[in-house]
Image 1 (cartoon, helix red, strand yellow):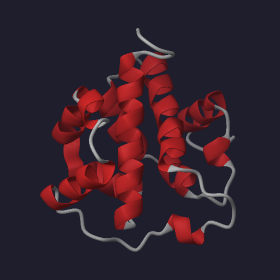
Image 2 (image 1 turned 90 degrees about the vertical axis):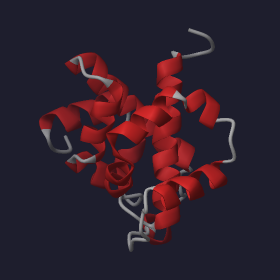
Image 3 (image 1 turned 120 degrees about the vertical axis):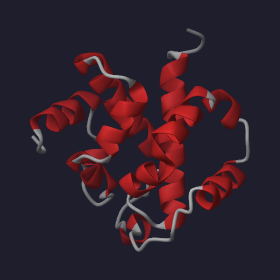
Image 4 (image 1 turned 135 degrees about the horizontal axis):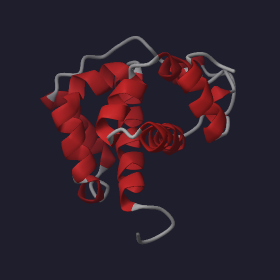
Length: 151
């Protein structure tokens, strides 16, 4: 471990932030982007996150959108937000923490867990930037996810 957290956690943070960035660019729900990229590409991005992190995020995003034929959607949570808009890095951190908690507490693999979390009910709740859920503490998010509803 170098730095403040494990490399794997930082790699997961980058992938989650990239998903958020692509979703904002294409105006899609986050699960649409996750499913379009697919498990193999997500695993690739996770394994090489330290390399991709050094690339221009706009170029990387454009390449991924083109290569995986991610169509423009109609979900624009940024335009619908009434309050301060968190960055893609902020939301990436929210997802990373939740995924790490699920991996640790349920003994799951990161990329598989990422796919499951982004395709779960909680992803739509986190996407709602007019709610308070995205800035709740990680333990609260995990327990809500585990229960299947906001506590």
